[in-house]
Amino acid sequence: MASDDKLTTGYQTRYREWELYVQHPLLRDIEGGGHYFTRTRPDKVAELIVAAAARQETR
Picture 1 (cartoon, rainbow, N blue to C red):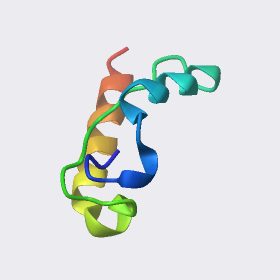
Picture 2 (picture 1 turned 90 degrees about the horizontal axis):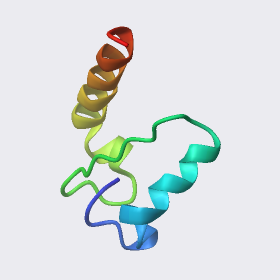
Picture 3 (picture 1 turned 30 degrees about the vertical axis):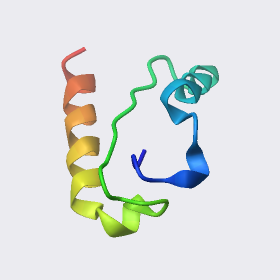
């Protein structure tokens, strides 16, 4: 989530709702990304995805 996204207020606790779909939802804040953080911070998003995938491989 982008820490400056005004459209997703309450995300700090609401991300747990994803437990309906995944075993261990993981929240990461992306500073300065805005609502479209996948466009404005693609390198940071890719870094977080690669790190999460690496953690899954070690489980």
